[in-house]
Length: 78
Image 1 (cartoon, rainbow, N blue to C red):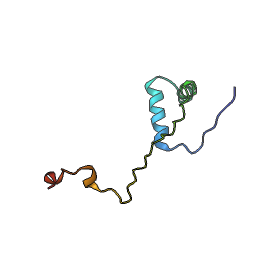
Image 2 (image 1 turned 90 degrees about the vertical axis):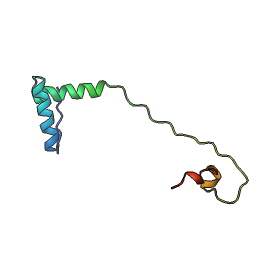
Image 3 (image 1 turned 120 degrees about the vertical axis):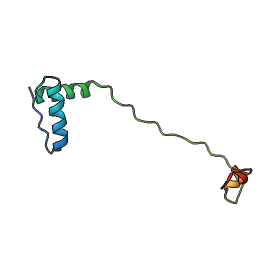
Image 4 (image 1 turned 90 degrees about the horizontal axis):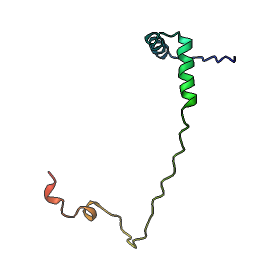
C-alpha cells in the first residue's frame, strides 16, 4: 500500500489529532486514515458562479449622496 508523509504539522494540530484518536480507541495512523478516507469521499465543492449585477444608465451626471436615498431621515439623526 502506498504511504504518505506529511511534514511541518503544527504541534497543536498533532496534539488534537492524537486526542481525537485516543477518544475513539484508535492509533494515530488509523485515525489519520479515517480522516483521509472521509475527506476523499466527500463531494467536491462546486465552484461559485460569478454574480452579474445589472447596471442601468440614469442620465445623472452628479454623484449620489445620502439624501438621494434617505430624504426624510434628517429628524432621526442624533
